Structures are given as C-alpha cells and as structure tokens.
Image 1 (cartoon, rainbow, N blue to C red):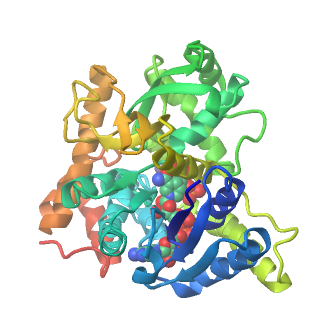
Image 2 (image 1 turned 45 degrees about the vertical axis):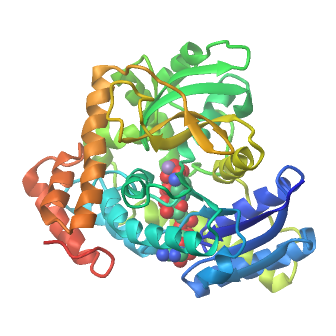
Length: 441
Ligand code: NAD
Ligand code: G6P
Ligand code: MN
C-alpha cells in the first residue's frame, strides 16, 4: 500500500493532536511516510510539536516527523495538506464576538459580522497557504477546515479556481453522530441528503444502507429535545454552550418541520435570543481558552515534562475522523458519501450555479461529485440567496478594497438590524482589524 506524506498547516491548532492520533489509529488504512506540522507561530506550535514528537517516537517511529515554520520544508513531497489555521488567533476571535455584541448584534466565530471580520482576515492567510502548496507540492490536495469556510470557499472559487482545495466542515458529521445515536445506529450506517450553504443547511433525508428512511423518527425526537442526546457522543461540542445549541435545534425545526436543520441556523432565526443569552464579558472564545485550549496544551506539556506519552491521551473528535476519511476517499477512490462545500453547478437546480453550496457528494480520486438535490423550497432558497450574497460581497469587498460593499454585506446579514448598526459595527471592526484587512476605501 502506498504511504502518504501529510503536512498539517496550523500545527499549533488545538485540533492538531486529535488529527495525529486519528492518523495513528488509521495506520493500516492510510499509512504515513512523513508527517510535518507547519505554523507561522513557532512558540505556539513547539508545545504540540514536541509532545507529538515524543508520542510518535513511541508509537510510530517509522514515520519521518518534524515541525517547522518554513513553508518549503513543510510542503516538500506532500500528498495532502490538512489545513486549520486561525488568522489572528483567539485574540482576534474574541474581538469578532465582542464588538458586534457591544452593538446588540450576534457575536459569533463564523456567522454575522464576526464571521465577516474573520473572513476578511482568513482570505490572506489561505491564499498564501495555497500558493505555498502550489509552489512546493504541485500535486498536493488541501483539505481545509480554516474558517469561515463559506467565505474562504468563495474566495478560493474566485481567486484560485483551479487549485486543489476542498473546504470542509465537521458540523454535519458531528450532528450525524447525534442522529445515529438517536436511532441506535452508527454514523457509517447513514446515507443522507443535505442542501444549503456552510453553517446554513438542512437534511432532507437520513437513510440506512437498506434505504429505510429515519427522518420522521429523528424529527419526532428533535422536536422535543433538539439534538441533545442522553449519552456523550463526541469529545467535541460538549461544553455547556454547545449543549444549549444542540437543544435549540428544536426551535429551528419548528420553522420548517420538513427538514432537519443545521444548528448554526440559530444565529439567523433567533438572533435576539442569542444576543440576550450572551455574556459580553465571557463569550465562546473565553470558554475555549479555559476549556479545549487549556486541556490540549496542558496534556502536551505533561508529555514533555514526563518525556513519555504513556498515560496521556489526546482525544479524537468528529473533526479528525472526517478529515482522515476524506483523505482516504481521495487516495483510494472509496466513493464515500460525504457532505462537502462545492460550487453549485446545478446540484441545487433553482440556485445560482456559481454559489459555493454544501451538499451531499460522492468523493473519489478526482474529489467530490455533488449529488443533485433538485428544486429547493422558496423559503430556504430565499434565505440562502440572502446569505450567499453576503459571502460574495465580502470576497468582492476584500478584492476591491471596497468599504461600500463590506457595509452592504453587513446590512444584508440577517443578524444585523439596520444599515446604521451595520456601519457602527463595521467601523469598530475596521479599527480592530488594522494590519489584518486590506485597506478599505
Ligand atoms: P488555534 O488558534 O488553536 O490554531 C490555529 C493555528 O493557526 C495557530 O497555531 C496559529 O498560529 C496558526 N496560524 C494562524 N495564521 C496562520 C498562517 N497564516 N499560517 C500558518 N499558521 C497560522 O485554533 P483552533 O480553535 O484549533 O481552530 C483552528 C481552525 O480550524 C479555525 O479556523 C477554526 O475555525 C477551524 N475549524 C473549522 C471547523 C470546520 O467545521 N470547518 C471545525 C473546527 C475548527
Ligand atoms: C463546529 C463548526 C466549526 C467551528 C467549531 C467551533 O465544529 O463546524 O466550523 O469552528 O464548531 O467550535 P469552538 O469549540 O471553537 O467554538
Ligand atoms: Mn464548520
């Protein structure tokens, strides 16, 4: 079996150890020749880099392993780049959340003004990463989690249309884990139909391999409990705020009970509720810093101190499972069915063919082949059209350096109540993002 060379970009990400552990677990299905971590912050990456060095020496000494801040070294011979960078790190995510909230608007990593601000930062980092890949490893595929995936995907479509970049999200996979628990199955038993945009979509069918439709049974459960399950189903999305999000899916379902909603619709359907239940002095970023980041980095420091990974466990969540399955699908032409972000190109019949949509796809050696979703109802179509236009305007504003277009993007976001509020939020975001955004005129 061929052995693969993988570079993880955003080596200092809280998700890096989980992915490495998943790769080790899958050594027989996806063998590694070489693994490199790449980050532009050596101080942060070094902690995880050293802990994983110890782990790999003990558990898989045959893999050539290193970590670096040099892109040429990082990408040399790479078959796959697993990317999850956060331009501006948690320091800027906190501002994305708190600035809109100060104006009474949803403050969220990927939705509303916070997501727009993050998008304006991410495009630069992502395009740089793609260009590194194409210079140093022209045959490499980039499987990219870096958020906001919807805006990043649109930027890739416009700025690097021929690049081998697949933008992905773990939320459908995470929610499908919950669905499978609800009906007493495993995620791999399920075949779904799904349409929408990233963090903005709906399941129209959830079947087992025999073709039995479980959507009505799951709907009855979600109508009462949301996606809240009785037992722990994942290591991700388990904090209190996430539990509330899973529960809130009940109220998302009520809006259109024909389909099962993506949890992120909460920011668009119930922005007033979200704002009223937010604490500007302690947002999700603070919870992540005190939770996931602390846990991952203290596990790493413990491994370094003891000089062994024995007894220390990095956990593997849906994030790691999905990206390794996807790499396998491409490497071995498995034709696995996965929810992916792709150019619409007719998959949703009555929607812009150039929009980046999220739909069920069959994935093989040439990447994802979208499954036709047919005609979608007016309500979802109108919501999607409004949101995809926000995403397109952000990318245009970035390219043209247009204040006007970015203001329009904020006005059009369903999370923002008026042009006046949009302007006030935008002006604060511009100030906070100096050095990260292109200059706007
Ligand atoms: P993190 O801050 O722990 O890690 C991000 C790393 O990226 C940091 O080490 C940082 O130094 C590095 N980085 C920033 N800019 C860079 C650049 N230009 N080049 C190279 N490295 C750079 O963040 P995290 O919470 O672990 O999340 C990582 C990313 O994954 C975020 O973008 C997050 O939104 C995304 N994510 C996406 C999904 C999805 O569904 N698409 C799921 C989970 C996480
Ligand atoms: C889900 C989404 C990601 C998002 C993450 C945020 O996995 O699909 O796009 O980045 O949640 O999680 P966090 O724990 O950092 O708030
Ligand atoms: Mn996501």
